Image (cartoon, rainbow, N blue to C red; front, side, top):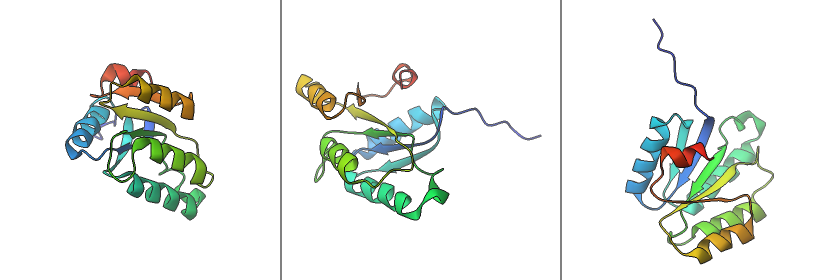
Length: 138
């Protein structure tokens, strides 16, 4: 007898956070709540951008791999979350589909929330830790 897989809200999502522990916890939260079938985890914004650009370069045959939601931390070395979003919006070739961008951060500064809103009012701003209630709003 084949076990039926639970229905997931999204096929693919991406987590970008320099904290491996946060990535592990968030990945388990996503899995436990059947949020996505596949979770791509990156510990740097640069590697995430490379991954996304490679998918676009490879074309439509990889459109089913492109993430539907991207969770991004703000505070990371070399390229922070805001730099990732700005670079992604400016430099990514036409994405295979437009993912939802979710800032998932421990920042409690109102300035960060305002900056995210200035970049795009479509950006969802959440504070860690990720919860089922938060996932239900995405």
